[in-house]
Length: 288
Ligand code: MG
Image 1 (cartoon, helix red, strand yellow):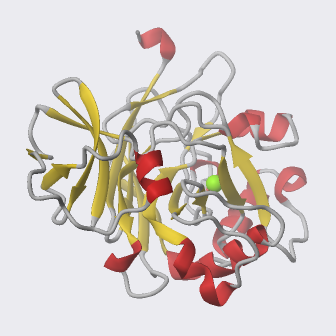
Image 2 (image 1 turned 45 degrees about the vertical axis):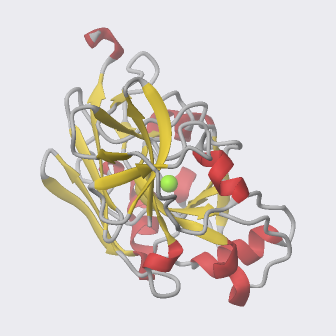
């Protein structure tokens, strides 16, 4: 099942769709956070109102416009991305890493596909994209073994971990440079785990203005999804609705020679097999 948050006739709803075209409004849930806390068995009540996701009357929002907590992120979780990050800034990115790097990302508001990425050009001169598989937790997870981790996953979405590289390196810490308003587009939907066979191995790609920049597969994660959940849940309870951004492969702007940071008007498409495409346009604040 594909779960959406959408706006229809000026009202936001949670909806479910089998095919990504026709969706059924789930009125029992005010928000996606409610659905993730209560759970959903995948059934559509008989009297549910149907909407056409392709209709101009329907706006697809981020599946979780207001996450209950900061997003948990992994840094440098694809080997090829480790190399390019080090070539951009050796001091900031060259470290021994026997264990995964975790950091968090503030998400006061997550925008959806079709929305803009604000460039914050007054403080950011090096705007970058990072397409990542987002794991959505559906059941309170504490002391979970990797072999049981799948039981705690609700589904998967696409996250663009938008980053201001100059702030990320200037402050010697990633939180601020990745937490600016509008830096966490997510979507277009959450695909429930039963749509995949076990832990999914999915092609992951980024296109900027149609040019392929990132291309890998989530099978290449250094720390895999079950291990991430085991490590984190050994010390912190993961609540339903938690989103874990699992890291990005190589091909980000800072890894190019010369770096090709995002510019006003650039279209960024984050694509993951079996989930869909998250499309956003970069825009300067001064552009109005
Ligand atoms: Mg990232």
